[in-house]
Length: 425
Image (tube, rainbow, N blue to C red; front, side, top):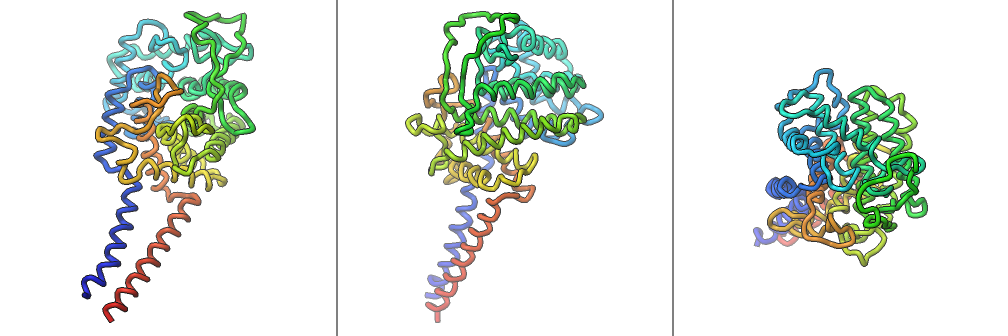
């Protein structure tokens, strides 16, 4: 009788511990997520995202989000081999000025940070400096631009994609800082500003996905089948908003943690505001499920866990990078998104092989697909950034919510204990 009565509090404790554990992914699942990312990242932007993810997760001191990423003496290239091996293979198999020839002017540049890191650390086995210079020249001088200077995401005509903000501006900013070229740092900011001009909707605080802009007649006129890419996607693609926020954060971190921080103080202020706009717009569209729709405001487009992970990753990163005071509600939304993806120890949104589910088809963004290499990377970024946020004290309204939950659980335990003692009595 006594054992039965006293078991109630123990069961409650067990259930509370289980609920807490359900909000995290175990190491086995995270290892599977990483393995799937590594094996499936073959397109240029997937390779670039994989490189960036490995830098942030495994070599955080070399990430632009670290205040010490510009060490007086470059680190040993050997320690960075997991990243540099990927970039080295790209450099040694390239067939033109771009790091990869795939029709996009922007996506190959996403690999550029890995190439620049190889050059800075003087890693053997590749002609890093020429590869980086060629990729930069292809962007600045070989790609069509809009009449006001926006570099096209595509090589055929001037098309502006929200994805571009993750692919090109971080490369320009990093190149500028490493070479003390403030013009490139300015250009990284200017490109974001121009893209925002064309794609940002102030009514929804969201970025549209794709638009076509008038081409500058004095510059390159494009190559390839322009008619095939003469289309717009004016919807609020959730992943595109994540790409934009994540790219702006990388440029912000690159500048903030560089010797040029004070020189670009106003630009940093703009970037913080623009990132906040995206986070506000996405938070306003977070469904009760905690998982975003493929197009943020359209439930008919289906749930997409990849953009959900990227949204949460960028929120945690923003808070740890500059801790804006108004981020309470937004962090709460990020927590809801992460907890939804991690529900039941990840068994809801991860299959037995570690694939995130459901996800948009990376090659056909209107469709829900089966697997997403970038989605795998977004999960690793989210998990890493969340753990960093927790380690810094979880400075947000979510902390208060967690305290309230703990207090509520404690009250339940006390009441149960009293009840059990009364039964014994």
